[in-house]
Image (cartoon, rainbow, N blue to C red; front, side):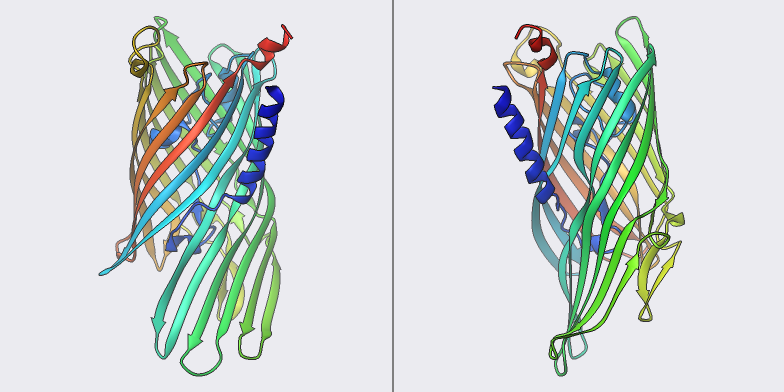
Length: 414
C-alpha cells in the first residue's frame, strides 16, 4: 500500500509541474500577471484567511509557523484542483471563458515533538489571455500565457507553549510570455514578443501566539513577513517581420536590478470555540509601488519604480462543525464561508484595480480515517476604478483531498 501512495505522490508532482496555468483574464498581461496568496484547501472557502489558523488536520502554507501544530505521528498530504468560469464585459461586449488547473501539491511531516516541516509546489502568478483590438486599417491581437511557480521547503518550531515560529524558502521558476501581432490591411504583419524567464529564491517568515482559557476558548494572533528583493532571471524581447520571415530586432536583459518583488506584511487574528467554531480575519499589505519593472518605452527597455500600486487585502472567514463526537455524518462536516476585498498591485492607465469576493465550502470527512475532501466555491468581481475598463466575474470551484496518515505510528508495529 505504501508504494502506491509514493507512486501517486510522484505522479502528482509531475502533473502539477505542467498544469499550473489557471487564469483567463486580460488584466494578466500587466506586470507579473494575477498573483496567488498561498491559500489552499479550507482557507479558500474562508475568504482566503490563514495567518492565525493552525489545525493538526490541515496544512496552512500562508503562515509557516502553523506547521508546528501538527501531531508528532502524523503525515499530511494535500492536492488541489480548480475549475474557473470567467465572464468578461467591456461596454456592450461580453465573453465567456473557462480554465482549469491542477493547482498545488503540499506535504507536512513532523521533525520531532515540537517541530514540523513542509514541502510543496504552489502557483506564485499566472498569465492567460487572448483578445483582438480593431485598429485603423487592420487588427491588433494580443495573447499571453505562462506562470511563475514556487517550490518551497518550510520548517516550524514551538519554543514554548502557545508560541510558534516558522520560515519558508521558495524557489521561483517559470516563464511569462506576452505576444502582440499587428496585421494591417496592406503591408507586412509584425509580431512583437516579450518573455520573462524567472529563476530565483524567495523567503517568508511567520509567527503565531495562541491564548487558551477554560479549555474551550482559544484566540490566536498571527503575523507573516516576506522581504522584497530584486528578481533574478532574464527578459527577452523580439520583433518579427512575417512577410520577410526575419527577426528585425531582439534583445536580452538580465532581470537583476530591473525587476523586483514587493515586501509582504500580514497580520491576522482568530477565535476558536471547542474546536468546532472558528472565526478569523486577515490583513495583507505589499509595497509594490517601490518594486521595479521593465517595459518597452519608445522602442527601448526602461526600468522604473512606481508602475504598480501598493496592494491591500482584507479577508474575513468562518468555519463551523456541529459536533466533534457522536451524531450523524453531516454533523461532522465542516461548513465554511468568507468574504474579502483586494486592492490589486496592478495600475492600468492610471486606474486602480479592485476585487471583491465571497466564498463558501465544505470539508467532508472520509469514513475510514481523518482524511478530508475540501470543496470551495468562490465568486470574484474584478474591475478598474475610477474609470471602468473591463469588468470580470469569476466563478471558481476548487476541490482538494487532504490525506491524514499515521505513518510514523504504523512503523513501530511493522
